[in-house]
Image 1 (cartoon, rainbow, N blue to C red):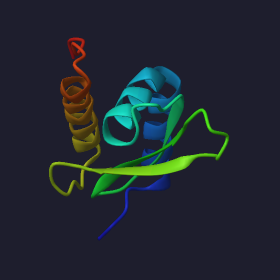
Image 2 (cartoon, rainbow, N blue to C red):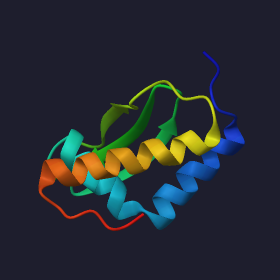
Image 3 (cartoon, one colour):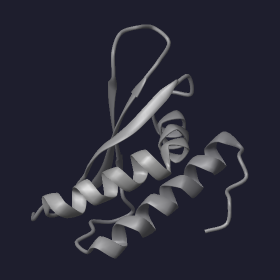
Length: 100
């Protein structure tokens, strides 16, 4: 399976970590641990989004991979899948998603 180019991955990570840090934390709380204190996206693959999150226990970062709804191959699909994860995370945590 072909990975996304480094340029695409870095652009997605920059956007998520700079503009949507709260969304990464929400996703980490829903699919990782509800006690997550901070989170950041660290990779994008055709099969999953990858984050690390921290808890209040000083044990360091914990990895989190959340599978997409299907394998993706095109850059526009990344946004669609992250929005879908955000919506699912809101549902799991009882949050109202913001409009897209």
